[in-house]
Length: 438
Image 1 (tube, rainbow, N blue to C red):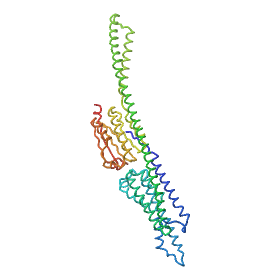
Image 2: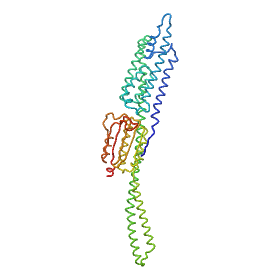
Image 3: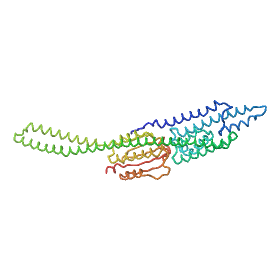
Image 4: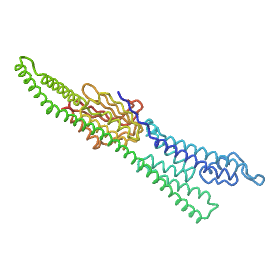
């Protein structure tokens, strides 16, 4: 039994770490101005500031002729800073929860049932903070984690809520601005939100570039695996041709030579009173020895004509940058004939390609076993599953290849029967070797 596991790519953990560092940095930059301004000059114009002023008014007396009201301003300022810090920390924690490297290995409850509530909480926090920086982070998160149509819908909702919050804040501050000033300020703030579109487009381009590199790496791994299998097939075919040529040409000629030498020995023995010529005896021994060596070479070439399908599969799995692949193979896999080896490699390639392109998985397990009837393979991932989508041309091609050899293909959802793999997509197929040899 052979176990192969390719290490997870560094890029899968590099991007979440960079996003976390950027979020913490932006949070500190957002808190720095009100912290430096102090209670008297800090601007509390967002929803958090309005709530802080309301709570401060409940616990402190109002300003009067004998009271300046500095205690109310101080409490509102402290509540504002605490509220901003808590909301920013909650936003960053939710962001990390959604983009952490092990997100696709989580359960279905984490990835699907909680997806919309978590996004809603993040969006509301961003609207409450009324911070362009956190709105930008949320927009880039949408492009990186959601399908394009859903991400655009969330982006439109984010823009509308952000503009509504700006209008509400300006309306609350209307005593300081004229009607024209409110309209102009709202137009400026709305135009500034166009940067969310740029951030969304940038994140989407980065995602497409990363997926393109993964597809290119997968194609290169498939090409190397196919090249390895093709090389073994060509070498095996050439060995068989050489073995047949040796057996048909040299072997037959040596056999005829031995017959003639045996006849010559008998004739020389009758002419020389039963004593055969020494040279003829030596020639016959050499001919017999050479014939035995030729037969040995032919047998060896026929025995070494197997296909190294395990090496081809290892090359395929080692060249995939993401997801991580755990490959387990029976040592008898290399005993399958060329036709079965080619079918096995094509089926595994198709399964790996589907996982890379559609599953959004972090782990793929491939288990190939052999018994007296043939090969049994189970391939499962921890991705998002098929979602009820109909089978494509790839799976149809797998069924056709397997049916040609008498095999079968079963597909379905992975329900945790493969150890660390949970809730993804699984396919199992059988490949009888007798049908492949026929």
